[in-house]
Length: 318
Ligand SMILES: [Mn+2]
Image (tube, rainbow, N blue to C red; front, top):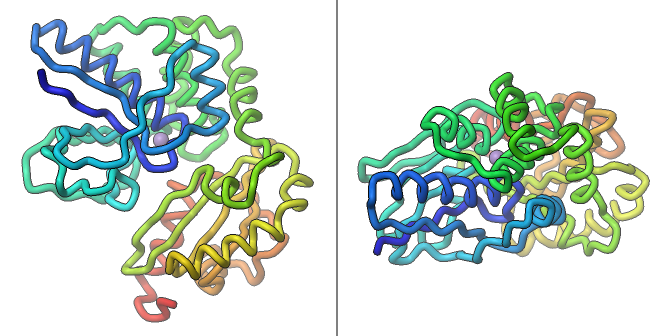
């Protein structure tokens, strides 16, 4: 029997985990239809966060197995297509079978594969559409997970990445998942993730951290949703010095943490390293204490602005 591991990005978030579970379910159901002997196994690259835990508990779904190395495995990548964020030794994978994602394309492969991306708010949105389009039965658990992922990635539809398709899919899934008010449920999820209390600076930085190669510069961008900014001010200094240490130890050009206030709909930054890049990319004269109204999305706002800056400024790498 062929086993395919369906896996999301490093530092898994709710969309990565729930999409891996849902796509495994979807593909298993498709393969049953065609009587093929294929097994789809959802996997994660590391511990899940509090928000994802909340979603999995609510719908009674087990945490997927942890897989960090692709060697000799057949893998399906969800919610990422960037080498920096994928399994270790991805070049030693038996095969990357397919990619399903909603991030900017950053991928090349020597073989023909199925590669699907759509400019929507979450990978879960694409998977939900596939279920409805192919008339594959969505059970309550899977609907609940897909809904959780859409609400998580779109920050309950407040992120500029939100599209009408996300909202339409959420409405349909809400009924199947038997959730009476998805906005209330979305905030419940966000609050689970937002708590900074009882976390070490490392845990705060790592919670939702992604690495990028921007024109040869190693850039790490983390994002946290904060309900009470007082909690953020209380830990700011400690987190800041940990970020500086991390920049040195792991040789980053820039480490940027985005603290997003979902109620005020904007963010504050903490940086270590190339401060100049941040000032120029976001057109601000200072970083400390500046609240950037409307800045909600790493994917659509923070990363592209920085990438654009580094593409124009090849020198100045350290
Ligand atoms: Mn996503």
